Length: 92
Picture 1 (spheres, rainbow, N blue to C red):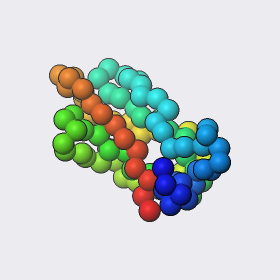
Picture 2 (cartoon, rainbow, N blue to C red):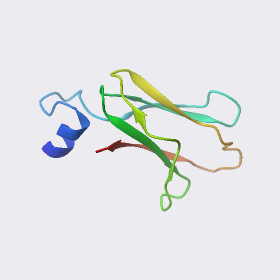
Picture 3 (cartoon, rainbow, N blue to C red):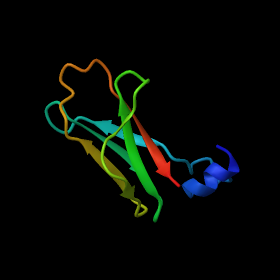
Picture 4 (tube, rainbow, N blue to C red):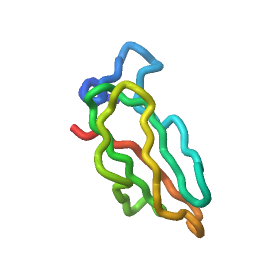
């Protein structure tokens, strides 16, 4: 990441363990999925998903970080979906 991206993400460029990444994708209930990531206090995140890597949709409204691991649940069924890709966007 560039220094500007590190600044906006609230990560430490001198710490190799400080970066924005999805921690886990889980299937908490039948045919739904959840995305988990480490947040930074005060930063705003939006989870997006795609089934084809061409079209991306917002999973929900932006979520404000509190320094803990956050999650966003995909309430729609993924039954019949061959693959679903998630990414976490930092809103700045």
